[in-house]
Every structure is written in structure tokens, then in C-alpha cells.
Image (cartoon, rainbow, N blue to C red; front, side, top):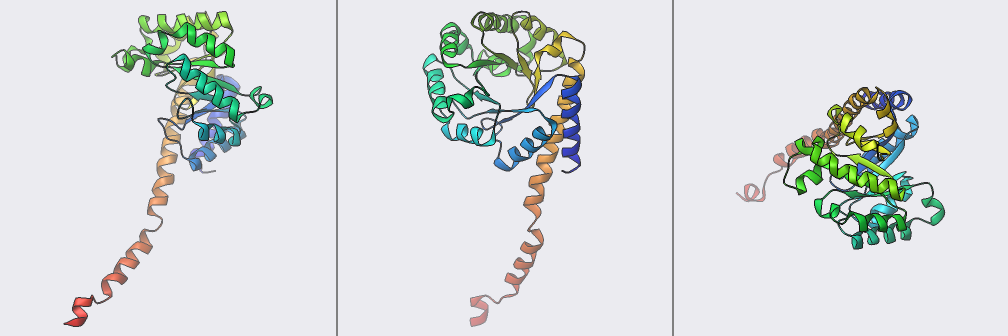
Length: 269
């Protein structure tokens, strides 16, 4: 492990022990996580003893689901599931890929991230209950679907919507995770949601047990999550920079060799 990765490992170990960190997260969807990146993240997570969450590419992304199974992912999230029909497609897809006995050890969730989904939330929740699927409330995309910026995520209007979903999840005993723009400013809004139901909350790369909100450690945990993501991005940058530059010397030599070869026109002159 390089210096970045050793520090990321230390953050996860400390976060697990003190600040409610339970998992790291990657995305095949918007983030476009590549296999080599995921393997590094998996090693760091497994060494730290935390779980791994992956957002797949869509409700019926069979290839992504197969990879989640192969890599031993703990949380699987489907994005942009905007209708009960799309949710049924997701349920059918995960049932196709994962045998029933394996599903018992995995949490399957779908994103509530548009106002259109929210308007159908009762039907969505009943379908989710029947299919063994929980919810992730994605606040930034939800705000965008309403024409708002990410500054809207901690507003009373937003939290009213999340609380309604939380109440429904409480009544039907569905897992609820909240993400999107999570920062120290989100602590009090998340506590409001937790009064109904909140199992976990997540930043872009780190997932927390919502129980950390009951004490005074959430802010410190979020600060660690910010450091973790920054280290992750720097590590990714340096990794691909090294790949991009590994053949520079060879390229320069081959270009010089090519230039030293007389062209056909010059040879004929």
C-alpha cells in the first residue's frame, strides 16, 4: 500500500472504532469506477473491516450486479428508479443474479432521487417491501429535479420530504439511507429524520451508521470522510498519471528513431 492508501486505511480504522463508519462506497454509475480502482478500494475496506457499497448503473444493470456478486459487495444501490415498474425490474434483476441464500447477507436499495419518484412513494414503498429492497434518499439529485441547487438539501422543505419517506420506511420496516450533500450542516436535519427512521447516511465515499447522530461524534466523522475522499482522488490521479507517463521515454526514443529514417521521397531524390 502506498502512503495515501495507508492513511485511508487508518481513517477507516479510526472511523469504525470512534465515529460510526461502516462502509466505503463506489459507483459504476456517475462516478464510473473502474475495476482497478475498485480492487484498491476493496483491499483497503477489507483490511479495515468495513463493508462495501456500490451504486450500479441502473435498475436492470445485470453486468454490474454480476460484478457486485463476484466482488462480495455488501450494499447494492440502484439509481434513477422512478416508477414501481422500474423497481420491479430491479427486484427481478437482483433475484436473477443473487441466489436467495446470498441475498440474506446483502442490503439491496434503490435511490429516491427525483420528485417524480416521491410522488409515487407509497406504491414504491409497497413494491420495495415485497421485493426485499430499501431506500436511499439522494438529496442533491432530488433538489435538482425540483429546479434547486445543492444548497437546498438541508432546507426545511427538503427535510419534510425526507421525513415523510422515513415515516413510511418506519411503518413498513424498510431500510433508509440518506445521502447527497452530507456535511456537518446536515447533522441536525439528519437527526430530525432519525426520529422517524434512519439506518445510515453517506458522503460520496463513506457510509455511517446513523446511531452516531445520537452523540457528539458525527462532525468529527464527517471531517474524516472529507479527508478520505480527498486522499482517494489524489491516489486515483497519481495512479493514472503514472500509467499515462510510463511509456514516455520509449515514445521519445521511437519518435527519434522514426525521424532518423529517410523518407521515401528523400531516398528517391
